[in-house]
Image (cartoon, rainbow, N blue to C red; front, side, top):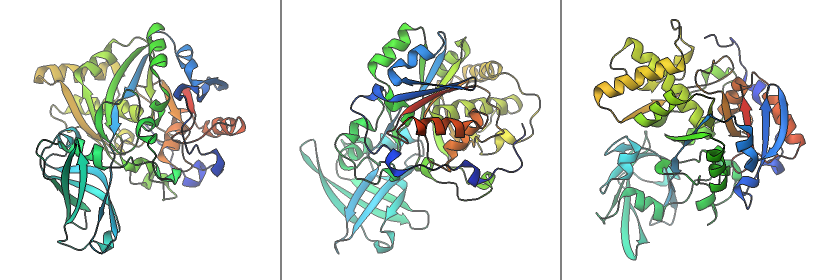
Length: 403
């Protein structure tokens, strides 16, 4: 695979008027607009028509992560507020699902608002009423440089997931520039979310309704669910003019053995619902490539692994069969990995041939992914959307793109 030698940040910007950013969701999820880009042609639809645009026999892969209310507020005795924005667990486990199930103290890396006012050794406390009982929660700074905090609470019956659900606030994207409402707790979540751990929603999935999912089934379109816990890094803008120098954020992904089996059985197109599902599926392929030369590889995909020199690469089906057999031999029911995969023009897609995705921020890594997938047709696609009054970003309208 050969990436372009020079890709400039300035080539991936476009003018997005403030009034085109959807600050609130539509009343009905599946009434959003849907732009289809196929064989170079653009057509306009509504999201409830999506099942009619996907070939029967296709496999649609969704991300079932669930957004946690990751923003927690504590007040110092002086009156100053400290905000803890949970990013990733450190203890008792760096596996997000295990950390969320903990009944005892946890250590998390966090973004910390008003960090300068929080003194070393100072313990902050708050009280929340959870299931008709007062729960005392304390937090202390364990590593200022790494921004790690230790949270404790006085109820062993409560898991950390239950505590956060009751005490935290939904972390809306910063570009919405508003506080979350009661409605956001439901609407900034896919209807099929299941595994707690994301701090941002896989927004391509926000448009799906039970009716759309039922229609997919009627049209003989298969569905499957993996897990990628979306991190706050998804909002990190590209700062370097040479985009390859951008420090790509990492995210935890989980595949079950059933996921691999469904990929092997798939006879039609594989359609990723969202860039997170896309990044997960492509990362799985590269883990399989590691397996070919290493019986015990680490499931960690660095940002540039796909761009390194590789010998002749097998098909996705061949790679997935290798992974399936390897899991069978070891009695594994699931794979937990970490990916920093960085997809930009020059990347060759190995697994996915269709992508459902929203319209993304100028100069973001998500624009780069769309540019790679559409052979740099993204500007024309986005111009069509702007000219036809599409709503942009997380609560905005949708698109389906085809290789």
